[in-house]
Each structure stands twice: as structure tokens, then as C-alpha cells.
Image 1 (cartoon, one colour):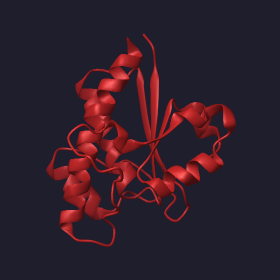
Image 2 (tube, one colour; image 1 turned 135 degrees about the vertical axis):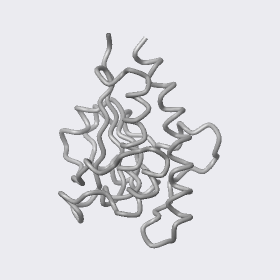
Image 3 (spheres, rainbow, N blue to C red; image 1 turned 120 degrees about the horizontal axis):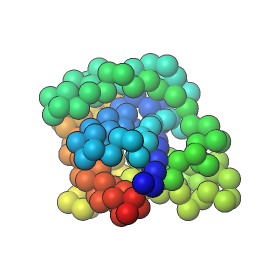
Image 4 (cartoon, rainbow, N blue to C red; image 1 turned 180 degrees about the vertical axis):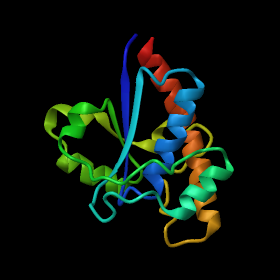
Length: 159
């Protein structure tokens, strides 16, 4: 069977990208694809390297059945562009930064995550860090939608 790998990227890798990481891992496991789909997340900056996801992100995700507690923040490295089939940015700023850092042969792998969403029409996953609980819930809604569309894409790549 084919293999496929996805890297989610936000600024510090403590809110948006680990949320997407945890949700896609959950969906991959539920589909029985954990042996052929690799999921990871990273930040564009090294602000929180080694830290667990934000407590609020973990708490809101747990209420929906997603476990983020084993994830640890890391920074994107150049080798990630060759290693992952998709490098998915949470917003346009991350997308621009990743495209600048990405070696030419891998540029087509760098995309905006919400391009995979089907229910929501927003282009960016907003940063919930400085907001209240509703921000984390909205991120979960967007990420679940994006991950459902991404799962359909992954299944097509594995066939």
C-alpha cells in the first residue's frame, strides 16, 4: 500500500497546528490507516519548542474526543519539505513564509490547509491564542472540516 504524509504548520505549534495534527491522527486511526499515513505539526518560529499544546486547545479538543497531550512543539526544518507530501499552512502569512523557506523542488507541496475544507469558506484558521473559548471552538469547527476534506484527498492518493 502507498504511504502519505502531512505536516501542519502555524506560528508556535501550540494551538492551530497541533489541533489539526490531533484531529487528523484521530481520523486516520478511525479509518485504519495509521500504518500508511504520517501526521505531524510544526511552527514557523521556535517560540515554544518542546512545549505541549496550549491548555485551552487541549481542553476544547478533549471535549470532542481528540487527545493532544502527547504532542510537543517543534520548528519547521528544511528537511520537512522533502519528507512530507503536504506541508499545510494555517494562514496566508504562514503560507508566504513557508514558500520562501521551501526548496524549489518541493514548492508544490506547500498549500493552505483550508483549501481542503468543504463546509466553511474561510481561507485561514484564525489564531485563538489571545481570544476566548469561542475562538478555540471555531478553530475546532474549521479544522474538523478541513481534515474531513483532507482525508478524502489522502484516500485518493493511497488508491
